[in-house]
Image (cartoon, rainbow, N blue to C red; front, side, top):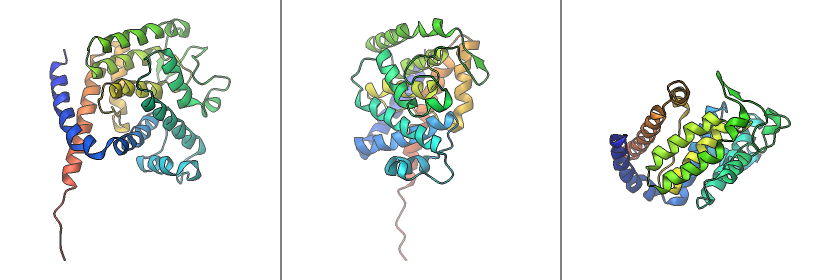
Amino acid sequence: MFEKEIEEYESVRKEYQQKVADKMGREQWMEYNEILFSAHSCAIEGNSFTVDDTRILREQGMAMIPVGRSLLECTEMADHFRAFDFMVSHLDAPFDEALLKEINRLATEHTLSYRAPGAVAGEYTTEDMAAGDTVFGDHEILIARVPKLMESTERALADGQHPMVVAAKWHGYYEYLHPFRDGNGRTGRLLSNFILLRAGHPLLIVKLEDRASYISALKQIRTEGTDEFLISFFFKSAIERMKGEMAQKKKSVLPLIFF
């Protein structure tokens, strides 16, 4: 299953690595990805920062708050930067609860008290959760399943399953568990990319404009009992992004016009 998607993805990934990622160099490519990923991941949760706003904040820090953006949004984005930087610098860390909790702590450290007074960043929720029109199950039962999820994901990677399939499967089930009081979406997307980056793959960036399709694919895990829609969405998003950036790079090579 997903043989065609894997074949196309690997073909595009090889070309993308040669024509885009390697040409940029690791540091510049990662900085570009951090800004793009942070902007879209936070926007999915309601942050109004554009990619340009995110770049300005990353380059100049909290001393330069983009016009029309709130301090809360700036703080959320700054926390996301810290979580991303930690993730990238700890790709050799075990894929376990300690990593999960630390990523969530960093992603919500300076905003959680505003959104959920009394909750502790990086600690599991103490009450049942809901998000949008979805009501999750008993939080104690769901949280008890987290260790097994982390362990089975690590085994799947060790067994040689394709990283994109593993990242999608982990992400779908993790969001179903929804173990933290806040930041579950951001944490889930960060750790899906931990799986990909550790395997040497490009980041997966779920764009704001694809939010409806993304949420629908997540919901079908609960309503249809299958994660095939989310896995297909992950492959489609990754392939379209890589193809789009290669096309953008090709179009930027314009002939010189002399006056």
